[in-house]
Image 1 (tube, one colour):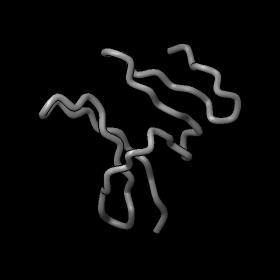
Image 2: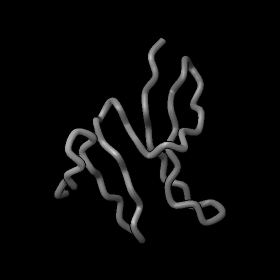
Image 3: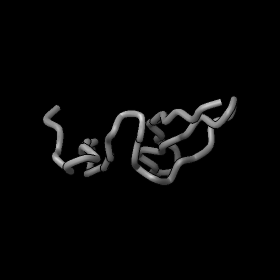
Length: 62
């Protein structure tokens, strides 16, 4: 089976964002803030979530 990236907002113990990767039928923590499926790198800044294109590093305006 393929792998899929998902994001989950977590407010337990001060964590703001944690990425997970679906491997088979199980979600495992993905410490890398990159989603190959979306072609994006994610970055938490304060209370904001920024997205950057992997190809050119440009920040997306959302």
